[in-house]
Image (cartoon, rainbow over all chains, first blue to last red; front, side):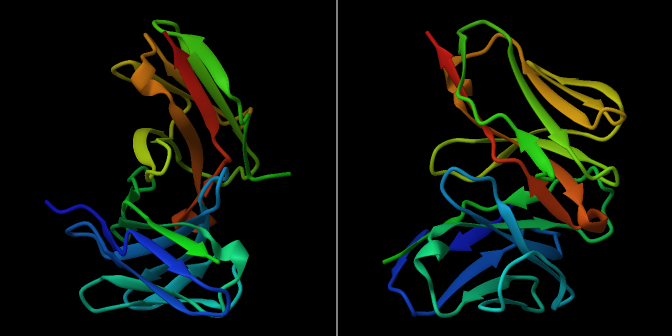
Length: 115
Length: 111
């Protein structure tokens, strides 16, 4: 049973560039959430996708956008990169309608460095 | 006030001792709470989840929840050097759609 997968593992970009990160949810999961974790901080919720729609969004600017595909995989796009966007980007998946006790399973993350 | 608060540590305990990690939350609508362990450079790994008041035990780990005091804790018995990591407390908020994390507590288990 494949867990959550993310690609790439590491990425180095320069300020002003654009980046796309990818996530495949755990088998049987249909909901994908993205989190940003800066060094020394806890993960911060960016947004959640279900049925190819953004269902909820955290306090992130419009430079952060996403997409969910019919196979439930998801992309996170960040435009006009800033130095402060350097972080570990985590994807988590779950099943919509699951009890609140169900866990969100995290992927291994993508380490983004903006120079 | 942050939604989920933790002492950043580091918390140092000798091998074999009990480590006690604490967390408070502000949103009374939070239904479930999770403890994740995170090794440096890795993604969070679930340790325990709890949603009812009281204690929940799983092996060497015990999670405690007190909704009246808005307080969650994690006890690690017989601490091992491999338990050295950052422990993240998270609350399920936003109508049950998002996890809100604390900043994490760094635990060091010393030989």
